Length: 307
Ligand SMILES: Nc1ncnc2c1ncn2[C@@H]1O[C@H](COP(=O)(O)OP(=O)(O)OP(=O)(O)O)[C@@H](O)[C@H]1O
Picture 1 (cartoon, rainbow, N blue to C red):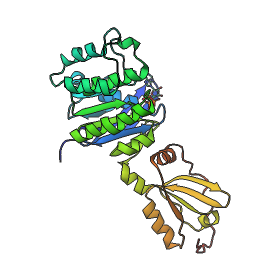
Picture 2 (cartoon, rainbow, N blue to C red):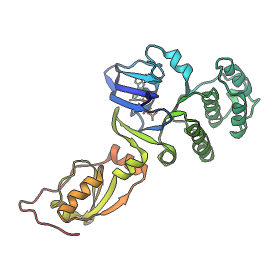
Picture 3 (cartoon, rainbow, N blue to C red):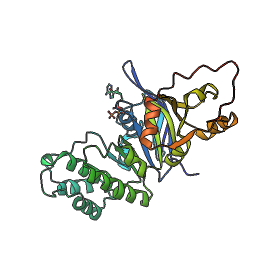
Picture 4 (cartoon, helix red, strand yellow):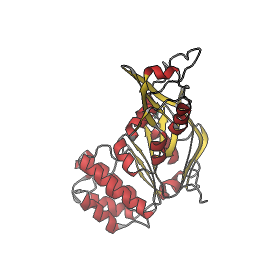
């Protein structure tokens, strides 16, 4: 098996007394498009900054293409295409000048592709960068990150600040182009419907901990919403992987991980709930804000309930 393009092993990070990453481990194979999902403050940017050697982990290790960013930060940054959340570029240059400037640093700079992206993204080539709109600045940052054709690309919320058309352009064209080229892409995002369309795998980061990592399709297969009469819960085994439990009038609405296993347990007590497929945003929500308390007491003598 080939070496992972990106690997994290039990990464922890504290800022003073505030521990913001706990035991974060990940392995991303080459060519994969991997989305890091988390609410504000979950630790996405901190993880990315450690991967680029911009900050040091408190403990644990990270590797990009086998290189330790804590020891060789410049080597890693030379190999990776990176777009940060608050990328600042040289405001006095024009986009064309910036591309020329960057091409001197990267022997692999693809000037033709940079020009094609400048025109596809409708960036005024000769305007001062300081005068560009926020979205134009993000697009220019993407070009700067990608035009040296790195084999690993790390993007911190690349769609932030882009309008819906530009986001589609990013997802449909740019990410698909990178996928076709076999580039490894790690990106953080809040826009889950767009992630769903392109990410091979996702990790859900909640308060500095990875609570689930899976191939996007497998996650949709594993996590389901089940609807059954509330009274049936008393006869149902309590699920080991309950993510959310709500009562809607006389019905119980559950979100369950490893749903297939739990459905078999329910079938054994003659309960056949309605099974509903979930989108990635609902799955994410169940993991990070799901409520699991309130399971009814088991009755002393359980009777079979059919629904
Ligand atoms: N330099 C720093 N000093 C102190 N605390 C920090 C520093 N950088 C980040 N933090 C804290 O670490 C936590 C995680 O922040 P981080 O920026 O990694 O979150 P995020 O998941 O990227 O959030 P967002 O989606 O809002 O960008 C937050 O509580 C933040 O306040």
